[in-house]
Image (cartoon, rainbow, N blue to C red; front, side, top):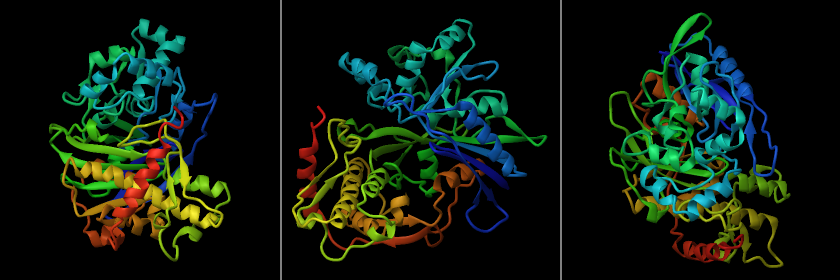
Length: 475
């Protein structure tokens, strides 16, 4: 079976072909980069027509395939005409914070109790609901279409599916990231929609992750779309996680951790963790997961490079001598606030413990350690909720840094395994589309494995003291 996965991400759209008759883990056959638009401070937008064009071009580049899987960038959303598919808003990207004022007002009014109880999510401009509410409040064309019963509101996957198959739909994992879906029922929640002022009748139907999403016309052939999924859940599947306690961490702009909890919905608000849907097969109950994230990971490293602290990534792949934290030098990567388990936007990124002999190299060593310590906070919170497996699977840019990976293993006191296939999101989408559940053995899946060498318990205490000093800086 030959399938194509379309990974429509924040910066690019890619086609990944998985051929069951060919050895290896599939390959990227096309990539299209799209523009990022920043019309005002805090606003981040994409052109929906540009994204759609790139999706179609990537599908065409895949050649003859038997099935299509669609991966999407998550909370990014827009409005469009239900009949013609014509967009009436830009794509408001997940990074966009234009709805912060309205979200803060809802929080003051006690609205977070409802979002936590029904959607399992805190009130935050990160999620789709606030963005969709902004569209309804500020785009007259959306109100006009709503009055005529012709408005469709949703995440980008539903927009693409309408144009590819003729019918807008979203999957349960993507819907779980909107703050509008009830985690217990897997359906849109009328009270949540009312809270945000999002008309429930304008939302697309929610379907299982793996199932029938219609067929796309490719060069005269009707090719079924058999999977649609949000990116981080796709990566979880691509990492080979299948059992409760299996966990993966993707080190991209931030660090995104997911741990499977199986058929049980684990609510852990006191631990700063978010319950979510991992995936759902057609005619089966959903599989749940816990999510936690560090806001700044690779983005912090790239920032350090932009400051001239290093020029080549090979320069920070290894360090002689003791760790930075053992020398009382700490970096707290709160450059965009603190995510899980703190959820504190008042915190600021800081180096602490600098002296006249501190070098740029020391600062970067502390930065790598700080990202590992923050990731360790997330994984320890998860371990208090569910027993984690012996191996934590990782991918992303930082997984290529040997010092970081070893330090992470020491912080977690777990085996850290780097995925051999860097395209875990695409692989997950393609595997779902093909109905593949069995993964290769660890000797094929992992490029390198790091065993814990020392216990960083004292370092954790030092980091915790430093983190406390960063909180409230932006209050």
